[in-house]
Length: 169
Image (tube, rainbow, N blue to C red; front, side, top):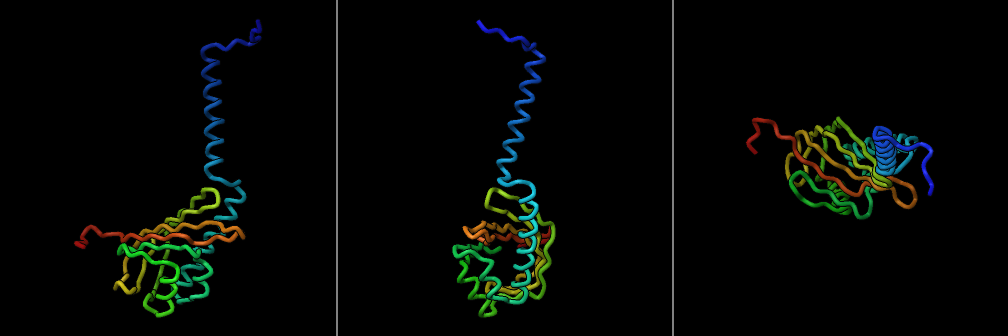
């Protein structure tokens, strides 16, 4: 019969359990992030630049830049609940039915899940769309996925108007 040279006391067992839980939680967190810290840092800078590229393309109606940013299966859900595909989004830009006088972004948070980045932010907007006046503040979520060529593409967007306490709408 084999016996341990160092039998675990009750407190030793608790320390071992706590240590194992720490290792497991650290491993789980690393797997959840899906990429090493240095790659996450670099990817964060890429996403920040893409968010700025999207803002500039939206303000200037730059169809070529927007086309490069959006995945072929892109789907947007506007604050009014309307669905827009990539083709519809580009057509609206082409026709000039979407026009932004100003677009300020703040409170950006970027989270990574493997080859996916989820961006949440606040957009203060002055503009119009086919649905009418767009001016106001919005919270939005934009989802990027790294394609097989290693480029980040926007696959989803959803916006919700931030209501002021005295808003009746």
